[in-house]
Image (tube, rainbow, N blue to C red; front, side):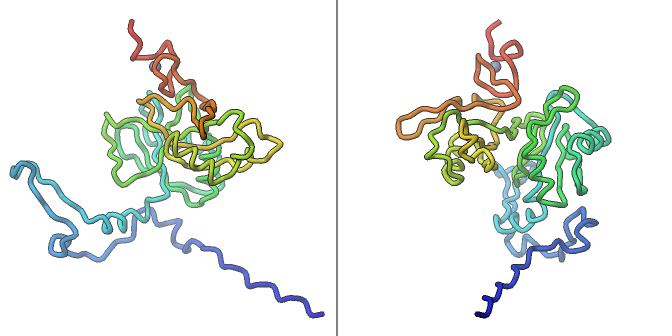
Length: 250
Ligand SMILES: [Zn+2]
């Protein structure tokens, strides 16, 4: 009997050869955005000193393409220069490929990875500590603004303790992660039944707000534990201990 022909291999997306060298987005053809109504200028309170640009959403999406997989990092409680940050990340992460680091001010850096594997390795390795300082890692977003008062967000791995095995399902854990923060990743290794003491998801959380300590499913409550850093017993915020709590009455 003739062997069944094997299906053709699905071509995997290969990065273009020049991608490694391309640090900045490819120069676009110059167009008049105002004439095309992709950008409109309006003045707040009709005051010419407060011009507000209203930018077309699709246009921003187009501009965002080179950045959508980037991460934003910051060393908590310590402003680190470009050279220091680059050296530290190189040393800590030990990635196979290159990554671009861009200083965007106030201690924030954008990291652009050349490979998806390297980005996954960095996320899997959370938390990263550099000389006793926690490395905050968050997703790049269109609206991110590296102002000093920017609320600190970070990715964290969380465990849902004693979760009924029936719920150890990637899609369902993604839904649970959405109830805790912004879902980033589900730990598929932790899904194996032999390690079924807890389920593990990576979420992005706001460090200045109390974190979710328990999650309920159809009336049953499950404890949520944050890996790597303490959650304050007083204010339930992530990233500082009780003795460092600024909300605690003195
Ligand atoms: Zn606190």
